[in-house]
Image (tube, rainbow, N blue to C red):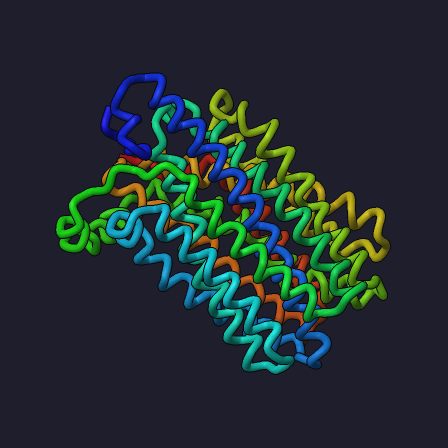
Length: 406
């Protein structure tokens, strides 16, 4: 009964308080996820457009997106230990402050150095936020047995924020300019910081134990083969989102589409994400995991291939909805697979480990797209990425046999 500690120790009184803690924790985490996604997606759509304004070449944009991803991966490696040491709520609040400081730096001046520094702060925030929020949800009472449903609700709420953020980012820039748009990020980060005070605190482990066993926990989860299935799902789920923050706006801009419409089209990926999270995820517990895994990867791969075949807004909008659907299913699966193949004691490290495949996607995808676009053209970039994910999807049965073998 002491699994969770609510203010004034009300949680220890009985099952009613346990249910109350679950409800409050889930609702506040979902709302904070919406608000966080608004700020992050505004930055995601604004950064590539801002880099175009500064005249960055494709490889320059690739490094602008990829280098912070390396920093993000390093930070996330220690995310599990930090969660256990300081508590999930404290880490979440710190990640929100990083967003606001990044917005301040964006506003401070139009220079490449400001852009890189702000990107590093955003990477620090992302490196801490996602695995921490997911770990918090997985540790809530009454979550076991409905992981896909809970993570689906969370992904759906995050997708709502993503939709709003992309739309706001594109149109705020088009109507008011970069300074006003980046100022909104500052305000949004502060709102989430204060909202986080409503989160019930989880019971923490002994800090000395966390410090001594933290690195061993990282090594333990790295040797656990089933977690690599979750990692593949995380990589696939992040790939379309990485493109939204890098070469998808570049592709749409090359077609002569204005920034407001770019943000609107890009936001439609969230229609697929919301559908996956709010409606499809609740049925995943009843479906064969291999089928769900393969379907999500094949869907992402196929739609990436289709993207480079169109040059007008309407078909591109339809394609990106289905890309978001595949990405959303993969995102729910990687979180539920991580929870399934880990324990409460190493959940933070396991979630940080598999979420790093998400960061790896943000590193590999822009570099690959930048290099291929530089020498072959952006259409070949979409084709190569799509075929690669498609092949992984067709190998789903083999992958499960290999990674879950005793």
